[in-house]
Image (tube, rainbow, N blue to C red; front, side, top):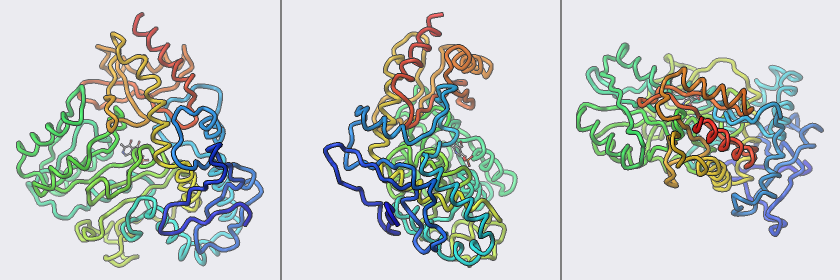
Length: 451
Ligand SMILES: Cc1ncc(COP(=O)(O)O)c(C=O)c1O
């Protein structure tokens, strides 16, 4: 297949090293990765082959605008507004989009014959294997879900070791639906649910101290929910370190990695946890409606089957989620999204996203009246950072700030609540964000702060 690369089931995609001097490689195939075992039905369509995929050979400077403008060109972005609300979900590249369209057409053309006879057996297995390979774990430690919510709800509510009276703990920065799932443990499992607040200003040491104090104050803690990157503020939690504190007290950690994989550069073993839920439709750029859960192999027995699932043996992680009939085209497109990610390189992507975040934060951090809610320490932020105009802590205040940015400056952001110290406005950049867009944001914020 012209211009196609096969992603080895058990290794990262190979980085192409031709034309190193330009540090840029344009692959003329969109559907550059095809799940091993899929049939000739999956031949690249003309629409897909017209797209380009940028591959970095090694490390690329985050300020190399020639390179990054090519990366930005991979996306078709509306010019109606400067969209700095890219945390909701990730835009697909044109190549991933073309692959997705091809997969939708294929499913419609061949219908049940394809899904029953070809895809179920080999396609899905290959997709799981590819996710696992990029994430650094075993395929049998992965089960595909419709997103992080489904992954985390299954992990939290089916966590077996929790006994009545045990403490299940979460924090203000955790995601709403995962907080709800933790609260459910009180109603359904007789757990004591404890919610703590993260310090503000937040710091790595501050959260370590907060968790150490919370564990000491709640010696019956058995389960802890942690969010790798807070969707409220953008703060990156030191998961491995908190998990080490927790493990020393026999506390299990479930990590909400909805925002982190694809935004920052890590593999699952780096987290030092046994349970985690992920999205593929945010920073991995897969179509909407796909994520996965991870359970370390040795801990599978500690998560119950989903609704007494009998489709799979209890020794198979796939019995831990039962979604019913879902959109298979988005799952079939995951390899293309993973390939776009690995072609660029997780470290390059992280560096560029951090550079873009720094671009606006560095211009306003010291402006009186503007509070930045994620610190500048290298491991503490990615693409997302929230801000608050000093004293403006209510929902209405922050809706007004986001509205002003949108109406007056044509910049789209989103209000976020739930932070103990008050509401805020979240700014999330993307690979197609232009540095000049962020200069415009910084200027708008300076003007608003001085009004
Ligand atoms: C921190 C966090 N966790 C979990 C989720 C749930 O993800 P999804 O709605 O895609 O399942 C989100 C969604 O924004 C999130 O920000």
